[in-house]
Image 1 (cartoon, rainbow, N blue to C red):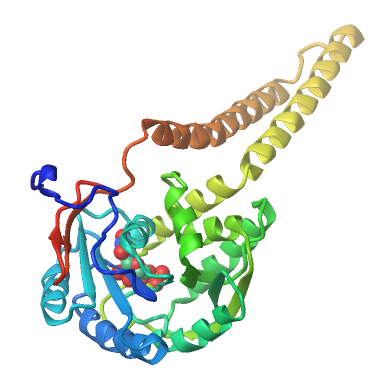
Image 2 (image 1 turned 135 degrees about the horizontal axis):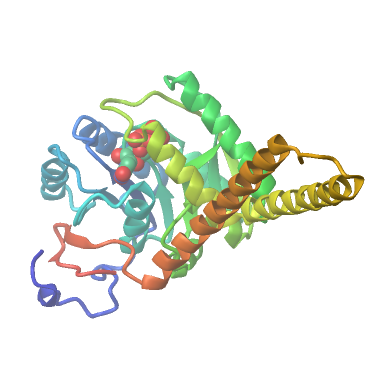
Length: 336
Ligand code: UDP
Ligand code: MG
């Protein structure tokens, strides 16, 4: 990475030059070379329809291995509205989105995927809803085309489990596609958690939030970067950062094990005094296995939370921005 000291910015860490635009569009991109140009064309047309010329489009390259960054770079050269942000490596969708939000300066901010599954054309309507005094207008997927049955089923279960466990009301079937006010994004910036589940964090912030139902389209091109393993990891982050339900369940299991252990103990005493010859070997083995299993399970759940505590405790920056590129200024940000 280049020397951090080359940054001649006023020092607030935010990208400051011209007055803030009315609207920022933030799109995280991982290996989206097939989508970037179409995304830019549709997003800039939607922005123009919503706010005229007063907008910026922030494209965050989350460590792509294909031509995504050179495409973003070319768009920066083509249009003064584009801000290209390149992360030092793949930090994951939620952190790439967080980096884009931190760089954004608009009075309102639209967070949207770069693969055109979320329609940029919804922007004018979302702006109108926000004009009625809302802090957040969040997209609700009324239908999802081109997604596998497994994905739809796991998503369905995930939102329902999360709802049981979370202390705050996190709406169902909602992604990260949303329009937010500057104030909400500033608060998000100040939330230091590493394992970020943005849609939950925005729900936690509260304020006036309105749903916007839309049809989620298939990808414009390329492949989803959320295979099952990554989705499970994401679900783990969401559940552990918004709920202590697994800890409570672990406690219930521990309690059930303790009650059973006590019953087995009473039975053992009874057998001894009733003079039964050989105490039941099977029950000893079965209860031993049960308790060992229960303890390991409970330890595992606690371990999940402790692991996250350790990661948070390290206090590392959430992501590293390598370059920020626009026509107005090419600055190096060691971090934000
Ligand atoms: N993405 C990212 N970093 C990642 C994974 C995904 O920036 O590690 C971006 C990706 O380019 C897309 C958005 O996040 O714009 C959503 O990802 P994807 O389409 O792969 O997920 P899906 O829509 O299938 O859930
Ligand atoms: Mg997608």
